[in-house]
Amino acid sequence: MSHYKSNLRDITFNLFEVLGRDEVLGAAPYADIDRETAESILAEVEVLARTKLAPSFSDHERDQPVFDPQNHSVTMPKEFAKSYQAWMDAEFYRLELPEGLGDSPAPPSLTWSIAELVLGANPPIHMYGAGPKFGHVIYANGTERDKKIARHIVDRKWGATMVLTEPDAGSDVGAGRAKATRNDDGTWTITGVKRFITSGEHDMSENIVHLVLARPVGVEGHGGPGTKGLSLFLVPKHHFDIETGELTGERNGAFVTGVESKLGIKVSTTCELTFSGHGTPAKGWLLGEVHDGIAQMFQVIEYARMMVGTKAIATLSTGYLNALEYAKTRVQGPDMINPGKDAPRVTITHHPDVRRSLLTQKAFVEGMRSLVLYAATFQDRVAIAEARGEHDQLAERVNDLLLPIVKGYGSERSWVLLGTESLQTYGGSGFLTDYPIEQYVRDAKIDTLYEGTTAIQGQDLFFRKIVKDQGQALGHVSSQIAEWLASEAGNGQLKEERALLQRGLEDAGTMVGLLIQHLQSAQPDAAEGDPRNVYKVGLNTSRLLMSLGDVVIAWLLLRGAEVALERLNGELSESEQAFYEGKVASARWFAATVLPKLTAERKIAERTTLDPMDLAENAF
Image (cartoon, rainbow, N blue to C red; front, side, top):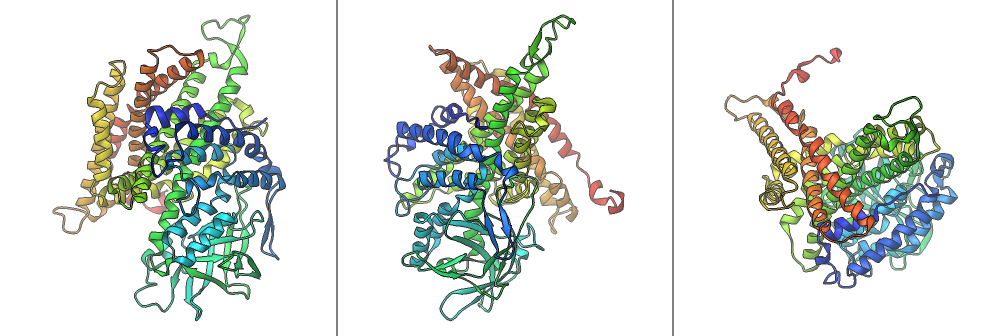
């Protein structure tokens, strides 16, 4: 049986009953997809995920990619390659592409719902299959030459990678030393070594196009220090005819020189890439013939961060549902109200702490699913505006604000809950390979690390998405929450929960104001300021990230509970009655058990001192 357990009902609940995605379907630019079509697509992908993609998931441990250092090649496991081919052959990836590159585009809210199903069933499939989406970035930023390359990536199902990190630079992308030198024919030769390149080598497509950040040499006004000196180049594994896409038979000089051995997600090749290091120059093209590398690459990074958050949440969802199934069948111990030696043994769902754990998992995963799709609604707005030749600046800003929460909050909460609650539900059995939970835990840890660690997400959230944005996006989200609180939502049945959300919103707002005060007092011209107060900001940005995530998720859960309470007033089937009752329970549990902690987080932030920064290193 498949390890994967989907929650398609909750996906459609969020899409259509809470977030009203009906309003963007059936009209330009999504005229070919109405609600019925969208639900049909989701149902088809769900079956594909369970029956064709998920079965090879557990094989990752026994049958891993084989790296040949002599030929710089990787041979993929046959069963995984079969699953990957099933996904690519279905061509649902075309829904992510604009007209001119795909067929019938779908709104991001629908494509991220599809992505959850794939990422929950077998995450590396979605990661290896990122070529067409990266092709979209090339198409949007490219010259006519680049647009032809993008079409080949899509139509020929080529792989693609994002190539940023270098061994000595790590997350400090601006410290990268890879260089690019212009050739007489207009191409560029790339030299240097990159590390941690996901999907950098495999044998599941005829070609792989690397999107490489490098520093141009000898170009006036470009190639300087930091991220602004980086340009973005398209460097293929094999040379090809730009007009036809046919491979010429020549190997380009982008060689994989190592594949990492890892804690988890082992079927995903994490590679060291060496450019022009084995007697063959690595040649490529400057994307768009403009030196705007970091801005171009951030279009890929933002997509990757959304994917990581979605992957983490999808894994927690199937982890919870697997734990729930186990708990319903595992008989152990008597009920607490009848603890006698001769009392009947009961399933562990009768035990209070197991119920606490299950309800905590349910509330968080449903809230984080709402978070992903809420962020996607702003991506819908951005895409619709672009299709009209316009810009929705507010939607762009709010999406930017929500991305570090989706990625940072989503990955941290999911990984912690998978280990402390989902696996724990099984007791000792959760530690065994008999069940998928232990692999979920190991595979999900990477989500807190790549595409920017949680600490980086917290700093990005505060310094760029709040301070640099002058609080515009945060103000919009806060005002949406405040408007909901001021309404009659919940018909009085959510009174206590609304009061908890109001207090949580105030606590989070106080934290934002406090960090801004610390930042202002750290400025050189601040009266009675101290430059070291910026450390107080750094000591609290992760705290702020998690706190804002709690507030937004509580609000989204309560919005769902409001809808559920309305539905419960009508006639429902037994399964629908239980579903809506569960939605109300999730929201109430989250509000009651999570939101009160924000007051403590605020007080901790208020009492921050510089003691940790004054402590001698040898005292740690």
